[in-house]
Structures are given as C-alpha cells and as structure tokens.
Image 1 (cartoon, each protein chain N blue to C red):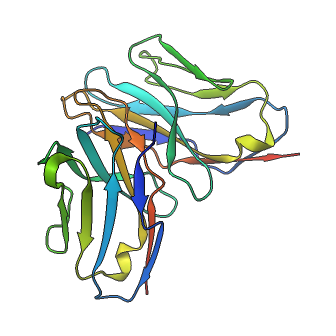
Image 2: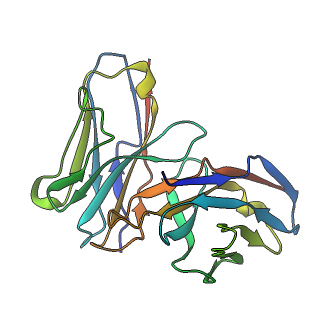
Amino acid sequence: GNSVTQMEGPVTLSEEAFLTINCTYTATGYPSLFWYVQYPGEGLQLLLKATKADDKGSNKGFEATYRKETTSFHLEKGSVQVSDSAVYFCALSETSGTYKYIFGTGTRLKVLA
Amino acid sequence: EAGVVQSPRYKIIEKKQPVAFWCNPISGHNTLYWYRQNLGQGPELLIRYENEEAVDDSQLPKDRFSAERLKGVDSTLKIQPAELGDSAVYLCASSLVLTDTQYFGPGTRLTVL
C-alpha cells in the first residue's frame, strides 16, 4: 500500500541555520504531495504542495520539489527562525479518486535563539 | 473566511462514558473528513463524507464509533463507550469536492481516564 516515511526528530537548529527534513513516499501512480505544519496546541496548516513531477511548492521561505525518480519531497528552508519551531508532516493524496491522505509520522523542529 | 471550526477543544472523560465532537467545515466545502491523531503520530482517516454520504468509513471502529453529517454541512463524531486507547486528538478537515487540498480544524484533544 501507499506510505510516507519522514526523518525522525527532533531536529534542533540554531536560528538562521539551513533546514532539510527528508520525506520519501511509496505510491501507485502520481500522487499529489503536501507539507503540513502543526504548531503546539493547533491543527494542521497547509504549508505547500506539489501535484506533479518536478513541481516546486513554496511558501514562507520553505520549498520542496517533487522528485519522481527518487520518490522524494524533501522540505528545505535557507534560514530558520525560532517561530518555525513546530511539527512538520509530509503527506500524499492517493490517486484512486478518494483523495485520501497518507501522512508521515511527523518531524519535530526546534529552533534555538 | 472562517476556517474549519471544532468543539470542544479539550475533553476529559472517564472510560465507558460517551463523548461527542462537533465540526463545522469551511463554507461550500462538500467533503468532510474525520481523523484521529495519536501522540507522536500522523493523522489517520476515520471517515470521509461527500455531502451527507459516508463514502469511506472502512477505518471507523463501528462497534463504538459513529458519525453523522445531516444536511451535508456540520458533522458529529461520537464514541460510546470510550476506552483508554481512544485518548487522542480528533481532527476534522474539509475540502472542495474532487480536489486534493484539505483544510484542518484545530482538533479536539480527548483524554480518557
């Protein structure tokens, strides 16, 4: 079946450091891919998405590129801030017409001042 | 535009008691999802509605869980009786029909003692 694998956290960085959170997936067809962010005590917020190979999603300085050849969708940011501390979830939307999401387990990011 | 609204935000109950969660999706969103998020995990789909119809309830534990979406707008998820293992965050999400981007509410954190 379809699945999403994320790097385990927590990831701890100093402010202004470069961020990479790895995400790989297994799926039939060509699913849409998403990154969601969850701040403490809140629900999931859509951060960015990509719907086809080589698409780059971007938002708030975060970027991720849909790589079909490596089945990956790694999240990057050039300079993190303390306010970026949160849990980040990678997800795919199944292509069977159900639009069912499969989530990774989440990666906690802690940014220190 | 208002986002997905959920209530209550927190609920603490004794095991074997009933509990209900309410969700109001984004206006115009025909598709509604209920997810369960266990601690340290990604959300897992419980049920998906297209208007009033539950089109995917394969992962809903039907012996104790029930859901309804009367009139195709608000939805209620019920657990009766609750068990210790039901402690989790219950998330509601909505989307436009036949689109793959879901918008999440803040969730209800359930603690079963």
